Image (tube, rainbow, N blue to C red; front, side, top):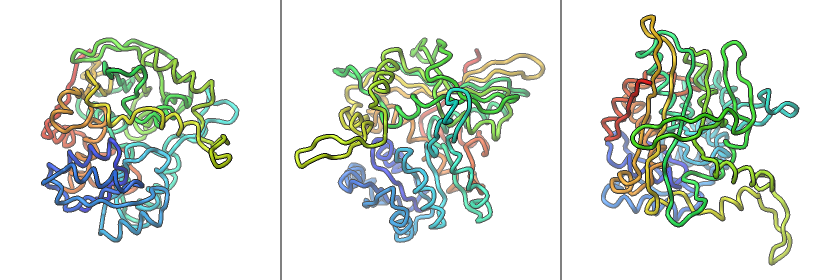
Length: 406
């Protein structure tokens, strides 16, 4: 396997450090718009970096990405950029005849008249619209293969295959007790992506109604997270799992709730009220005359890079899938989860917990694809593949998952 990794930020760098310890691939080209960042990611691998190369690429330039895939003979494109670049990279992979893997799906657009009742363009719609084309060509696009979406979807498949006879509800629940020393507001993941998913209308699925939307931060609940994290208030947030799981796993209801905390949600609401969540450029004065800037890009530029926070971060992050249903005629309720302690991920990989937890899952998936354990054609989510091989390999990577009876 020869991999083109597009994006050398926090998650992309973590991908290189995890993959460097595994023998399943021959080459990984690490490409970024900032060549120096790609070179730094490769250089940091030291003696383990022999199978890695750095390259420059504009993720929005389909022809340049396709040419880079062809130049290095890469048969897989792993997208580690933010969701703005999903479609150009998705199309570039198809054009070059490569397998495509991402961790977030094509962007949604709210319903123009009833944004908090009906779906407009849903997450992943643009990709699923081309599923037939990918299937007919015998090519695979594995979409939503991070931690959430990704591992959470694998948990749903595992629950359906081995733990339940019928499923009433699947609820992805994400929470943490992470703190960053010396920072009042320092998101542990891309603020651009965080704003996108948190301020868009959340999507809920019900089998008798289909997909519909609700207000941001609606239906608050307190969820007790394992391994010392404890109770965290969680709220509805737009996320890919709700759009993926019902396609392959039978459930009466699917939700996603994020443990953001009141201070975090208040900050996001303020950004929205001020218009600082907008992506469309606004004109502002500059030293050489008016310039156009995206307010959201300005917010992102003004905050610390999440990849640099590891040394100041304390605590754990938990991603998991809560499932309620029946087994052998009796009610059952479980929480399948994966916890990463920032102290461990920094000591072992030099990566903060959130980006490491996101990065490990596509690497596991790449290894399953390389060995033929996972195979398919078309546009498929993680739920379309057997879960047990993934969970066993994740444990073999030194990061076991857990199951708690509720």
